[in-house]
Image 1: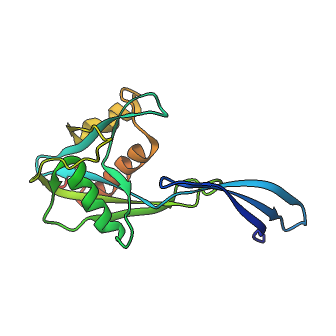
Image 2: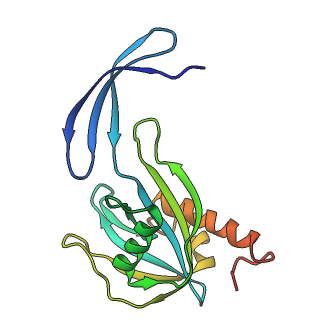
Image 3: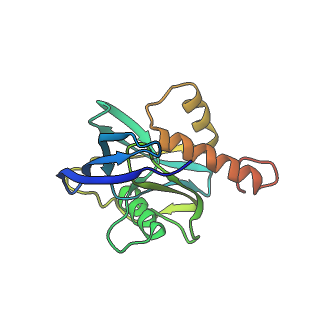
Length: 190
């Protein structure tokens, strides 16, 4: 199998949020796709944040495209010249006011949707978190902090009892596996 060749590339629009690019691509067999659309976004970071009491730190906020309120783990995009680890620590502090004395554990690094998007999401686990600050939200953000028993989250996701998004569900189950593997068979890390 061979990669596709990009014959031409033009931006249809560029915004601070993301860009839409139209590529003309030649497939290995010589066929040409004249209008292959690629969404360009900054890389994202997210984190499963757990307190010493085994509470999951979540944020609830309205998501316009989904037309409802969603319960999610803290997340956001990395800023210019910021590492993914620095980005997630900043996002967690801004959205929730929580910090930790422990370095985040990297759980994974994934393409979001390589068929149409060029960005990655890096997922972390932050342990022994505690609230040290007030929220520091952007002027368009309204975010409610919710603490939930870690083990309860899985049944809420599995039973479709909450509105959430794929990245939260995926990160939660990755963290659960990590904790199981690193805690002698218990889902808690204590």
